[in-house]
Length: 96
Image (tube, rainbow, N blue to C red):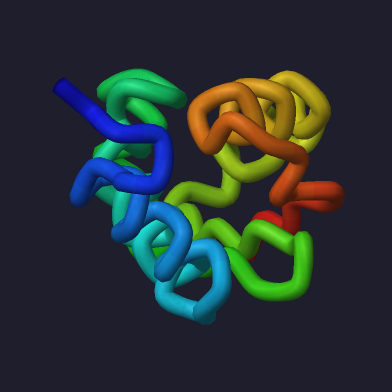
């Protein structure tokens, strides 16, 4: 039986992460791990780096043709990433 003044370990860890900068690092790590699921195999194979910094998502693509094609779908990628993260962490996508 759970008392009202007690918290589960999960709740304590979530509060600790939210109050520290670790939360952002974990979200970026999870994003890198789920990138293939978010954008698909083809894009993931050509992605060489992903960095989330100050609401900007920097994605390096090794194919100029694919990078050009993706530039037309930036808003969809931003939406998918924000949906994955569960909050509006990305405002702009920069393809390199």
